[in-house]
Image (cartoon, rainbow over all chains, first blue to last red; front, top):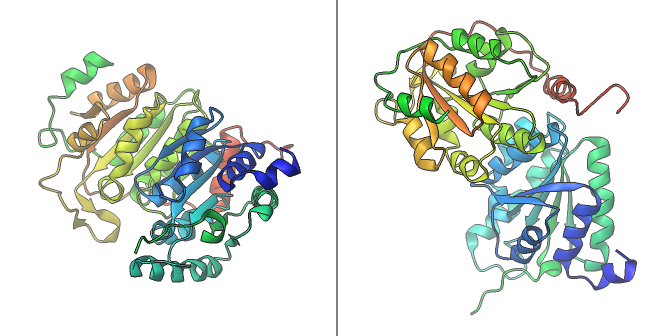
Length: 178
Length: 210
């Protein structure tokens, strides 16, 4: 992946390439509209083992087991799904030092139309910060590859989870057709 | 496998013998000869696994109630040549029933799930679980798509079901009705030690790898 193609690639292609380049083979997700092109790209690429779980905490459990078995994993979810995982983070992933890669499609800001999404969004960063879980909000496509590559390497090296909050500024978000 | 499963599928939750978790855990671990991984669920499933002997291939899940089966699925995906067994209580399974559908869909041949069903949240004061007198968790598992889901009729049947699961491949779910006797041991409480020892037990970490 050259620097030029990185800059020109759609965000989901950069995510796919960065995971692959860092040997992240397993991606478990609870679906999200904004993440749909990424999920499709992962299914299309034979390198990945990717499938849906019924809950976000279930997805975290699966990649925790995979890490202990020697396979790197990531989970994909939307903001509301994040609201279901604090116990799995606080009682499994963080105390067991699992380098879980958590991708959140950010809902609840920059044009949100659903009050429930907006409120869950407000809880996300305080929860991550209270657990001292690295969390990075990505807004710019030209920074995405660098952020992912360095942060995945840091997660593995320091045995700590990391959360990538992909902003509507990067992904376009989900638009309310008024 | 198929024939063993078919004959035993006639055993329902209500005519299976009530057995003892520690006794069955010892019987199960006694059959493990190929460094199979065992994931113990939170509470007494863990405690009796610990008490049965601390194998390096045992993982004791201290928190995250309901995630023993998802963790076992992850290990099974990462190490397809190693058999993985999840030991989970009925209350814990009820908290994460959806994982049965995920397991059925992935259909890992190297995964066996054992459900210890005493119909109570034993560790919190033995309150009855929802469905304690009405739900059949083996039928639930079968309905979720894990077709090899059976109740163990008695101890000898449990032994043969475990042997068949290890020999013939899964995914398999074995339901065991158990009594309300407390576990006979207690795990250590250090998640990092537990995780690191498990990874070494699985050959993921060696002295030279870190």
